[in-house]
Length: 180
Image 1 (spheres, rainbow, N blue to C red):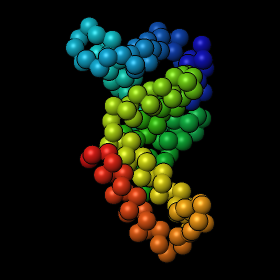
Image 2: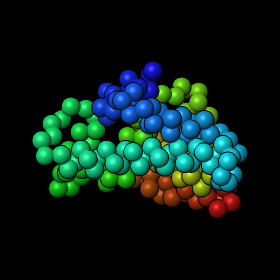
Image 3: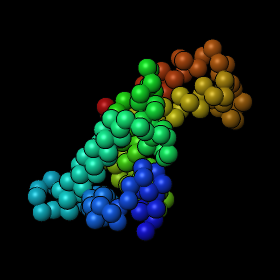
């Protein structure tokens, strides 16, 4: 029910009229997120990957149909994405837009605990992604505060002019500790 309402409001998709095909594919994908990653036909993981592929195919088909419609007006989030894609210098490409729409459907349907579990699973499975995320977060914290407390017991600060050197140092430490 929640998925149907969200799909209706977000992308103007009437799942009841389409026989529930979008929901079935989406449900296949979410059911296999935490399964053992064996991409062999018949496994839960394979069904999960096929579900995602089918949802993305449906979203792409709907994107093409709505982009090519002669008399299109902005009525939902999908139309806002299409308007952005049609700009001379869009901030995202078509693939990113489809991933965004897919993520919005996922975020509106799944609970916070499920999403956090999936994030933790994939970050532990991919240490390079975790390293990049760590460096990105540290860089943001350093740059947004214009200084960094190096040692709270001594009260030493690094000024904003030294943050680039410190970011490179932190990146080197993270890369060294991660074994990459």
